[in-house]
Image 1 (cartoon, rainbow, N blue to C red):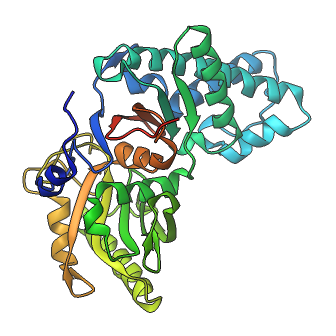
Image 2 (image 1 turned 180 degrees about the vertical axis):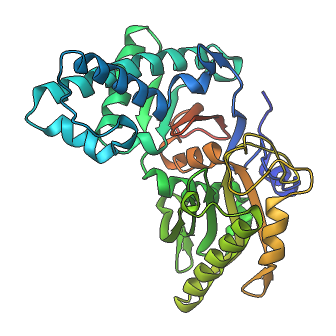
Length: 359
């Protein structure tokens, strides 16, 4: 495992995309290719896994002529609707959702145990659980039940839900991609979170007046574009993203916010030092994002060459890394920690803190 460098070395180190060395942490690894029973380990515990378990239980109930969850197909049941079943008066509906949660927790615990056997994860003290599945009562119960199963297995690892909403965590974490000295004199940066369904861009504020406190970082304003509804080309995606960012720059200017000329991007896949994507970008909109002839940071910088009269600087990293970094204020008391983001897939990243807060 690489050792943390001094502050002086860090400041003079080359600034690259997908960096292993950041101001606050060492990124020990992400987008693990560990294998599970259904392919990659992430295929054993994600949103689809929960849906399959729920559907299997519904089929059993239908054999007796009753489905307490009604006629809505499982894939069309929203998190809010499933949460409502848990709070309803129909004990059959409560039971079937609880059984699906139990089955998912069993699989999730098994996945975590396999991760912990990997050398990069062997000293993990705490795991943050993020992603869309974490939002809502079902996700919270699944995380809590998984913790109980891990305790029963004698694994000394703590499982905690991510503090920020998953939509905002993917933006907030972008602040921690930037070297601390690049934030000096500013109050906010721009951040982008790119996914297989949505693109979100936002103003992430971390300062008030002349002071700056990353522990108080929050999303001041964000814009969501559900690109899955539009099925845009890759070129149209960049154009739309640029217009979203320009709108946010206008908002910051009108508010007299001291916006740094920085854009942090969280994107699925393995991000190379030059900003290219070598693996994991297959679900991104409008074409081959892994092409040798496409580079998102360069394309975006062409569209937005300056912010506030200064040259634009862009830093991109894996989206699970960025979402995990949003939890930095709550991770100061541990040395080794990780993030698992449960959504369409299972994003993963592992970190070693450069400094540890004394308990």
